[in-house]
Structure formats: C-alpha cells, structure tokens
Length: 238
Image (cartoon, rainbow, N blue to C red):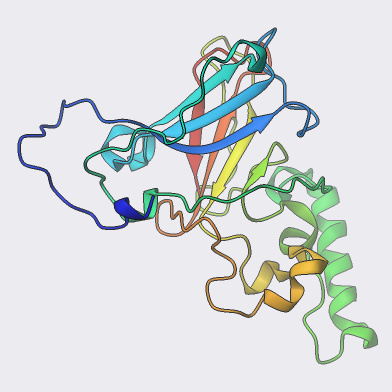
C-alpha cells in the first residue's frame, strides 16, 4: 500500500463520495483461542475508513466482518484502494501475525481497595530489594497488568480516561475484542517484548511495525457484546 503513503486530495471527490475501507487485520478462530463470533463464522476481518471524522472519538470508523471461510468465493489478489486518505498513519504496513498467548491482569483501578494496597506494598518492597539495585523494579501496571501493543481479547487499559463500564445497547457489559495500538511497547513496558525480539528493542521504530497511529499515539480498543457479537460494537481511546 505504498501508494497511499502521502496524504492527498482528489478533485471531484466530496465528503459523501464512497471510499473503499482499508483492511486492518484478519483472524481465524483456529489461530486465536476464545475468538467467538456468530454461529458458523470462523474468520473475523477488521477494516476501517481512513478518515478520523468518520468514526467515534475522532478515530477512523471501524467495520467488523464475520465470515464463514468455507463460503468465501474468489479472492482478490489486490484489495481496492481509496483514492484519498485522511492521514498516512491510518494505512497499516502489511505484516504476518504470530499469535502468542500471554497472561494479563485487570487494570489496577478496577481492583478492590484492599488488593490495590497489597500491590502498592509489594511494589515498595520490590523497590527496596537488593536484586534491583541500579535497575527499575517491576511494577504491576506496566509489567504485569495489561500488555501493550496490538492484541486480541485481554483487559482494556484506562490510563487516559480512568476506568468505566462499556455497555451494549442490549444492556450486557461488553468485552475487549481487539486493541489497535500505536506502539508495541514503550520504555516502561519493555518487559513485554518477546524474548526473541529483545535484541531489536532499542532499534529505531522497532516498536511500530504496523506504522499505524491512533489518537495522539495511544490505543484504540474495540468492544463487542458477549451475548451477541452482531450487536453494534463500541470503542475506547486511551
């Protein structure tokens, strides 16, 4: 998609002119444990409109397409590309996923007060431990709680807004489906870097393989309804 790297304007295209959606990600249920779609659907395609004015929270409009892979017809060698985009940071760099399950824990602000106090006490003890002298000791929120980067499922992060419940139109509490992150890690979350990639951690732009940026360098989480994934999704921007 290198032809879309530059933001540009095409004469004759208006605000209501149809624009092809950009593909963001594709997941097969066989590769992602816990990926639950409508009955008969085994593949999820995530697309978005490359204009921040067309989505919630001034972000590109997200479109979810659940499909049955056995019923997909002829595949396109090249997807249709929009003639104009709102920002080149909405154009993902093509890449292949290698899913790896990780264990997360709830955002600290959603834990009960007693458990939060125990965690803060543990962190204070870690800071005083001899084994971390001269090094940054592990902290719950950055090293053990919510993993940074793109991820399916898991827990949502709430650094910007503070935690709140995302509720479906049917009344069911919604669950994170996919987090679209501007970076895979930052200095404070470098402990999440896969062991096999540690030698790349300090290289320039190594933590931005997709070249996608949301908001001011934050993360966009898509929430779906556990009762019926066909219900309208919602997003949070942190």
